[in-house]
Amino acid sequence: MSKRVFIKTFGCQMNERDSEIMEQLLASCGYVSVFDMEEADFVLLNTCSIRAKAEQKVFSLLGQLRKQKIRNPGLLVGVAGCVAQQEGRKIFKRMPHVDLVVGTQQFYQLPSMLMRLEKGESNREISCNLESSFTIPPFQKYYLGQEGQAPSPAPADRHGLVEFSKFVTIMQGCNNFCSYCVVPHTRGREVSRRISDIVEEVTLLVSRGAKEITLLGQNVNSYGSTNPVADTTTGFADLLRRVAEIPGIKRLRFTSSNPQDLSACLMQCFKDIDILCPHFHLPAQSGSNSVLKKMGRKYTRELYLEKVEELRSYCPEIALSTDIIVGFPGESDQDFEQTMGLLRTVRYHGSFSFKYSDRPGTRSADFDQKVDENIKGERLQCFQKEQDRISLERNQEMVDRTMEVMIEHNQDGTIKSRTSSNHIVHFTSPLPMVPGDLCQVRITHAGMHSLNGEYCSM
Image (cartoon, rainbow, N blue to C red; front, side):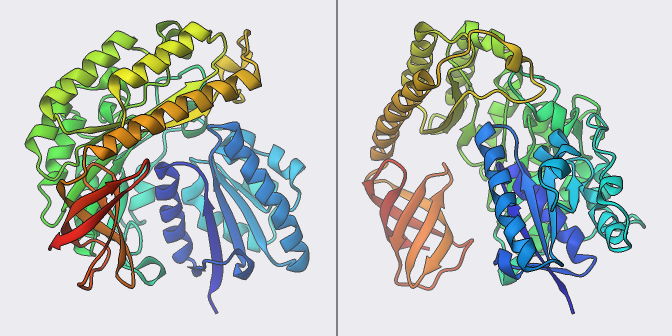
């Protein structure tokens, strides 16, 4: 009888991809994924610690799992990802019912760790190597078997559905060490995969039904440039062109980018590669030079705006989104107004904005001039209100335009789809459609966060 696993993913697309890999690893030792946590023999939380709120959600769910384990003593509970890497053995002290702690650079060992646990070894002994946070992740172990054969990167019929949109990790870690960020401490230094392995994985995914591919990295712009496992002459723009040549891909995306490394070669790709989606997530974090300097961001407001202007010269229709942190230590009213000015100048189609929170092990945790929580909340509300206004105006620009959309969900003819610029479009269709299909839709109405349309043609 198969064992059942429930994997809960917190955080970004990188974590979603890691969860897929862990699901594949667990399938190789007899685990079947289930949707209901109560049905599981093994519950694995793949965690994110980039913000305090995400970490709090993890420990809240672990508290609930304590009660589930009382009802079902045979239940295994595991914590993986960044919180596991960051907290290590301390998780066992705080949550004694946890059986496994698997860091970001150890999760490929998950099957052997479970086997050792089943043989009666101590969970603390099995999880003892979490401190090696700067070990370069051996990517070959993620994607190649013991004999060098490439297994499926993730089941194409996961949960019984062909997945039309897939993530492909091209690199791991980060070398930037921004003063507020835990990523270099939890995911290690930058390392890139070989281009041949990436192309092989994408080819396999497309052969199994994937039509949209998203390339993932903490900073894809620096692919191949540091600690390279990748071909030494290959940069990210070269990789994009190679992947775009693979037959069967309808859409190509990537995330995330650091403005300091945004090159003209990458910008040119938006002009040359038809399937490269005209959407770019370019985290600014702040519009103030003094705050950017304290953050350890290696660009200025002026350079950022120059990059945006140049990018739009290659692709005028490109939709831009960003990340913003408000209330960074020492951020004055004037600094915040400069961030608001950046928002009004760039006019992002959307953004992810957050209140600053201290993270363990980061330099900014020791900074003085902490901003009052009430002021942070007021600034965040102000920024988000202005972003909503701009997002609505941006979306209204699309009304009466006919756009190609990719189907994401179809329930009795009521369809959720997405444009290449990453806008959600709802419409109804007289024809049967499945996720991954492309069709033309005329936009009839714009809201702040989505569009409505009328079906035109396949």
